[in-house]
Amino acid sequence: MSHKLLDMGKKDFAFKRLQLRKKRPALKTQRRRLVLRPFRRGAGIWIVVLLSLNVYLLVSPRTSLAANGATSQGFRVVLDPGHGGNDQGTVYRKGKLRLAEKDVTLDLALETARQLENQGFDVFLTRRGDQDIPLPSRTAVANQIKADVFISIHMNSHASARAGDAEGIETFILNNATDATSKRLAHFENKSADKNPEKAPDQNDVALILKDLTLDANLSESKRLACAIQNSLVSVTSQTSSKSASQRNRGVKQALFYVLLGADMPSVLVEAGFLTHPRDRKLVTSIHGKRAIGASIVRAIQQFKRNKNTREAQLELSRCKVH
Image (cartoon, rainbow, N blue to C red; front, side, top):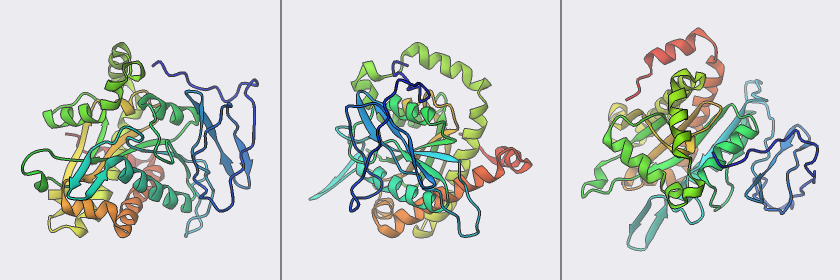
């Protein structure tokens, strides 16, 4: 890819401590015309990453003990709120109501980050506000900080006359799409790269990555992570719907999403519901719904981490079906 990764070990990087105003939220995005500075404060680590001559303060990961006394310190989770800036994502309009995907995904990511931090995870966001972050830069950040998992959060939509009928959860791993619907969705989510060809992955890079997928140890772990998130989200969101879990479960699928290309860790893209469906729309915009979705993702990550390199992980893979 054209994006150059930072070498956080080089001595020639300037180090500068960033001070946040006390009354502002801890998760604050700042830009500086400087390089980067990781520094410690208490049990946490602040990390700043240089992207296109702008420095983005991602998230202050705070190590805290879970309710049962266990800690997940050292397990790094990167949450990627889909779209941002001029890239609205899918937009729902009805009368005076206007709901953009980029705003919904940011809210969901912030809530999930809050809950993960409460459980002791080190959490990082690819964006904290309404920024336009190039797709390759998102996984580049995850690679730079050596994240354990990368989760890109998105919202689905349906453009047909029966758009209100489509609802439910889908989770994707990186691979060639096996059905027309997945191909269309990937095409839509990749539009921001299509508009900026210089920021899009080179076709040769794409071909090489796809060729290596069969030998990539992250593929099976991405699949296991995807199934854990899918099952957890379906279970919780079905409680607010008249449809059964099986009806809301749109499955774990595979498609060529640019945002997942080049990730050096298990990575998935979650479509957390349909903005065009009233129940899904209410769920992702209500406080209760956002908390429930965040809790579902947290439980899935806990399960993924707990069962890593165990017999249970192999059983999870055998039960996980990718469409």
